[in-house]
Length: 267
Image 1: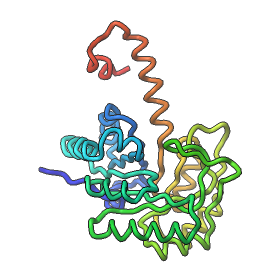
Image 2 (image 1 turned 60 degrees about the vertical axis):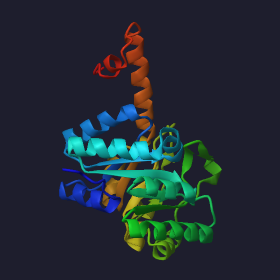
Image 3 (image 1 turned 120 degrees about the vertical axis):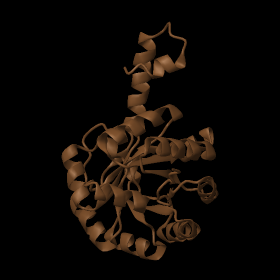
Image 4 (image 1 turned 180 degrees about the vertical axis):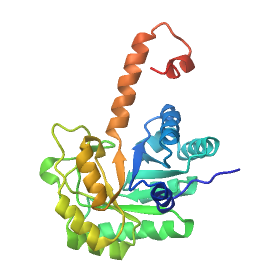
């Protein structure tokens, strides 16, 4: 039976029905990562949320990604959501929607509040008739994501007042918040502002998104989930593990010439 891809609201509902309080959203950097994503979802009896950066989508192709993810979701019987991550180009978001992505993020966090609200609302209005969910972002999260960097001095934490207004005026399905995490590799422990997180959650009433999940401790992550986080982004860890494992495997199998033998080695 043909399986459609799910939007974020539907995939979160499935996760919660299976006693998961939040869903991980994992960055796909290359097609070879896909089988491992689905295998892990099957083993944990979890629905799957895969997110794609604009750079990866343009490199691999929006339609190819949709077809590949949908095909595996159907064959492996895993409820799956395909999400476009951190995109500030509305035309690229429309391309993703047309291709079949079921969730998108408009990132206007670099803009002033008025312009961020206006642009995000445009995306929401494009998405609603297609049953596509929209993630917005308020506040500047530090670190580097898809070639875009935010310096420490430019980090801007999400305020309760702005978050409430943003959600009310845009009607986003979920909100990415800046509460102390950083994109990329950590040099120390993430310092999540738990009180701020609780207050933003209470004021907005929408699922909150934690970006920069790689460097957050298990204890902090569990606490953040009780405080309103329903989606946790993990990207750097995926990339680091993939590159390190490739280096190790290729080093051990330098004489191997069959790609399938290398990638299916189980090492």
